[in-house]
Length: 453
Ligand code: SF4
Image (tube, rainbow, N blue to C red):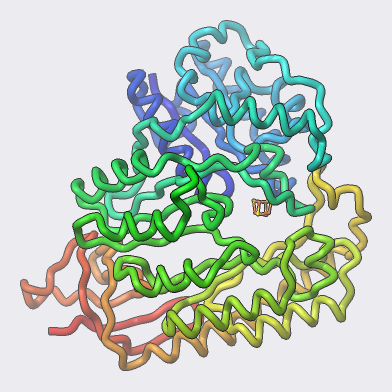
């Protein structure tokens, strides 16, 4: 039996897909890159944007055809599925599965006998859109307690970089976000389980460990451990490797965390700090629980303790009630911080969230215009930051080598390209190797360099 996994959304979903692959391969399934060859298609979905949800439902005609040609063909959907979308998907998919129940996937698939059968467990009729709803809290606690899927051995997609989830869920309830409703409340993974997984990865040759969580700064598996302590413990694991982490909530970034990153030699000079808006009123409406002043103070601290740190962020343009003036405040903040990368999203309302109750009153045309303006500022600041690398000698991690070029990443997560010099045998290098190069050129999105002989 062959399986094919289609993943939407963030790195957390990609990491979960590696665990889904692990479960299926343990059960004897074989991976196929071709959807049309698969007996089982697993959609690991993301509800953050409505367009992804519509695309998945739209693709379904194709799957119906596969089912006609292959009576064993089954479809499963998992990941971030909102309750409102779940009902729609139950009519289409053979199985709608909570991500935390993926260990039972092969068993549940065996039980799906007929087309269109509804195999999901009954979902309690609860109001999920109220953060303080007592019943919703209870339901989430139940979901968290019965499911630790992190112990599943993942099938990593890369031989160099490994995503390692350290927690799942979120307690923050940003008003536009579905994550607390789809993934439930924060649950931190046990320290020993994380350290053992990383030790094994390093022994098998992995060079870059990316710790994942919706808000890694609130990692708290027990009263004696927090995120800075976890970083120190990972840093003490013998071996030549880099540590990165995603994603940080500005309200939870502490001086201790920044000093820890500065002191730990394996922690790289790269911090993703989601801003979302440069206007205090909009931040409040987003329920982000920090001000622009607080954000700028963190940036100042990062620049003081980690001078070469690249800072990247997420921004939403066109949040309900956002005015031109408020958008300009975001632009001003972008200019002050000089981000290395900004993931710009046009606001789109998602049912079940708090902001869904607000009128989506910024036109799509205006959102697109603001996105273009924000992108222009990003291009300028990213280029300015990258130009500082010209003439510098730096270490990169090689990720890919083809006939002409070597591709890699810097510690600060910049893409680097350099010409392959095959004349000199000593310069033939492989993926997963650290090499020193001199930067010769840049644009806003990457660096170019030469090998040092
Ligand atoms: S911090 Fe906010 S945006 Fe991030 S996952 Fe949690 S609720 Fe969503």
